[in-house]
Every structure is written in C-alpha cells, then in structure tokens.
Length: 358
Ligand SMILES: Cc1cc2nc3c(=O)[nH]c(=O)nc-3n(C[C@H](O)[C@H](O)[C@H](O)COP(=O)(O)O)c2cc1C
Image 1 (cartoon, helix red, strand yellow):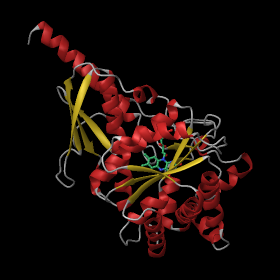
Image 2 (tube, protein in one colour):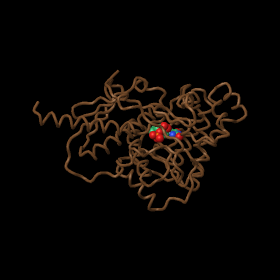
Image 3 (cartoon, helix red, strand yellow):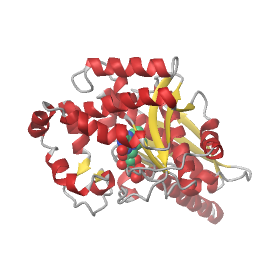
Image 4 (tube, helix red, strand yellow):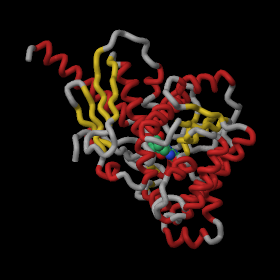
C-alpha cells in the first residue's frame, strides 16, 4: 500500500465512523438499537441483534424496521455532507446475513441536504404542545421533506378524520396498559433505576416521559403488574391511554400520519426514512415532535398472546381502513410548539454498536 492510499484509507475509515455515529443518533422505539455495525473498506453492514433476528413479536420487528429506515437515512445524509454518495442494499429477511449494506463512493459535489445539520439536535418531545397552528408554508416544508420517498405519503388528520384517529390512538395506548405482555414491554423500556433528573444512554429516562410531578409516585407503582391489573378493573388503562395518547394529540396544532403502499419490510424501512426526514425538518423549524406507534403498529400483529387483543387489532385495522382506504398506516405523529424536553435520551459510545455477526 502506498502512503497516499494508506492516507485515503484512513480518511475513509474516519468518514465511516462519523457516518456510523450519525446512524446511532437516529431514534428507535425504546432507545435500543436492533443492529451492530460492521465497518468495511468503504462500506457499512448492519447486522441484526439476536433479539431482532428472532423476529417476534411481529410488532417489535416492524418497529425495528422503521427505526432502521431512520438510521440509514441519517447515514445517507451524513455521508452526503462528507462528499460521499451511498448505494443501499436491503437484504432479504431470514437470509442469516446483514440486514442492509451501505456502499460509499466519492460523488461529484452536490448541494448538501440541510436536514443533515439537524441530526444531533433531533429529540422526542413529550411535553404538551401549543399553537399557533402551523402555517401553510410550514406544512408545505414538512411535506417537501418526505416528498421524494417512493410510495410514502404524509396525511394531515383534520376535522372528523382527526377525531376518529384520536379514538384509535386512545384505544391503542390504553391496550398497552391492559395487556400483560404490552405492559411489560412498555415498562421494561423505562429506566426506573435512575432519578427523574438523570438522562440515560440506553432505554428511556424517566424525565423524558414528562409525567406531572404529583403523578410520579403513582406512575412508578404502575410498573407492578398485579397493581396495574387491579386498577384496570376500575378503568385505569383508559385514563392512562387518554393522558398518554388522546390528550397530547388532541391539543397539538398538527396531527399527521405516515402511510406506505403495503405492509411489507421494504415499505416499513421507507416509512422510517420518511419519519426521520419529517422529524429533522421539524427540528430545523424549531417545532416539537412526537411519534406515537401503538395505533398503527398493534394492528399488524398476527393473532398471538403477545400483542393486542383480537378485538383491538380488528378495531384499529377497520378504523384506519375507513380513514386511509388502500394505504398502510405506519406512524402517527404530533407536531407543534413547546418548551424543549425536560430530559432527552442519549446513546452509548459508538464502540457498543460496532461489530459483525454474533
Ligand atoms: C419506530 C419508533 C416508534 C416510536 N414510538 C414511540 C411512541 O409510541 N411513543 C413515544 O413517546 N415515542 C416513540 N418513539 C420515540 C422513541 O422513544 C425515541 O426516539 C427514543 O427513546 C430515543 O429518544 P430521542 O428521540 O430523544 O433520541 C418511537 C420512535 C421510533 C423510531
């Protein structure tokens, strides 16, 4: 290897590490990424963690694919800033190989996508939002961010459609407190070992949940299933679903839905790329943003004891079908104006995400 090629190889490695870091900054459903990154000479391979490779329950797989779409979009944006073009190969599920491979190649100078500058500043904001409403220009800029992704649409839910979608969100969020496996999934993603003032580099810090101070001891106690089950006899799950889903979406100035053309793996990754672009654009516009997955994702679960009940899945699927006939609803989000989040989630150091197959 000549000195020149050694230097360019070292440069490429630095770039790959920066691109990997940007991928890690992308969101995942409960702040636990489902991949490990293998660095090649001029490529990155994302390998599934064993839990993700096992593929169950189905809604966890869908959430992982959406997050992967966001991760790859971040990587693509950062590569563009570094003067690299990316070709992306998504590999078939169940092939025992990586999930996706990104090949970098130097590209002729192109305008840098401004969204890349928002990667480090994007966060979930679970505060209550306020107006004024988004202007037509603001909505237009958000739509434009999603515009180029094949088969993906951003639908603004307004008027009667908004009321009907709010009921679906309420029903689905309530289900997360009513069914034992969903309750366990929800509460195990929260860092009860930390105080309300601490951040967490993996899973969700308590402070990021924006639970009102008087409610905090109650919320902590609800992680115990026997108590939750008892209170559910008195309708506690409905109250919690109202506070976690219906209320914040009802009072947000904008309520949107990302749809795909089909419920297949590639579509979920595309929807993830769209989610990320929308979120980055909102961040650039200093707007607060929260995705809410339950109302769309739980409807995808086949009949198992792990997900939502059969009745709820049916109700969600029927409700969305009447709202967006022919489309696959993937992710609801609320957008508005708010103070910055009280606490945000961090990430583990990059080394924790590097490595090949297990
Ligand atoms: C696929 C997906 C689903 C998510 N679902 C929800 C949700 O239902 N409710 C919520 O409050 N946040 C949701 N989030 C936000 C994540 O909890 C959040 O991104 C993660 O904890 C990391 O925090 P950060 O966004 O501040 O970096 C979701 C994110 C992704 C990518």
